[in-house]
Amino acid sequence: MDMTSPPFPTASANGIATIAALIGDPARANILSALMGGQALTAGELSWHAGVGAPTTSGHLAKLSEAGLLAVERQGRHRYYRLASPDIAQAMESLMALAAAGPHRHRPPGPKDEALRTARTCYDHLAGRLGTKLADTLHERGFVILDDGSALVTDNGRDFLGGLGLAIPEVGGHRRPLCRVCLDWSERRHHLAGRLGAALLNCSLERGWIVRIPDSRAVAITDAGTHAFTTFFGIAPEHLTAK
Image (cartoon, rainbow, N blue to C red):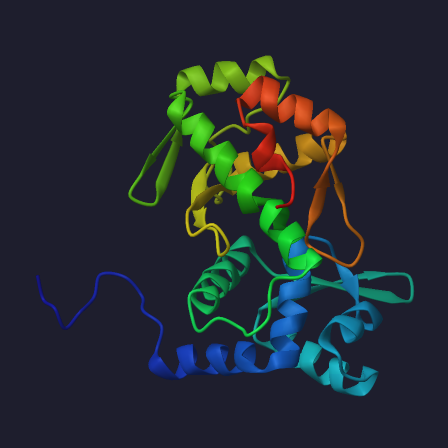
């Protein structure tokens, strides 16, 4: 193979540096982190998360939008911002894993930190201990095959999830993978992403197994959720509560 001619497009060093510089600003990093919850937010809400004034936030949002990191939805007089794609969420989660593995901060984790570690959204799928335990139990039961960063739903897995009333998205007609893994920054292991991960999150919200915590990516596991995750997925209750 001619090593001077890669068979697929590669990003230039300048392109990588440009994106890294955009994410590297603390205010912009806070904006992107706030949108990791999967919900679209207004400029005012993002200004609060970024810790800067409205004019400065507008400038940050413009730069992130121009770079293709954010998408804008207009509803009446309001503009709502969200991450432009799941790939951006995956990149942010990977950066969070790197940051978490760096020098420890000289303070103990606060209640919000522990809530994030217990259960949170990673864009449109579940993360934290809940997310990784779901991946573990589905893998251990042979419902999902996890191998070298990839994931595959088995026929038994489709039957199991279908028995729970969870519709498994069909393979055809989608650019996004049915099931893939995402490295969890707090657990240092993988949780499930892709269309299956999104379906698990939506099912958990719709059935009241989890509820969103305001102004946070964290979600609270309800009593119904503890029963469901224990009964259906075999997750020990101690993994479903903040430590």
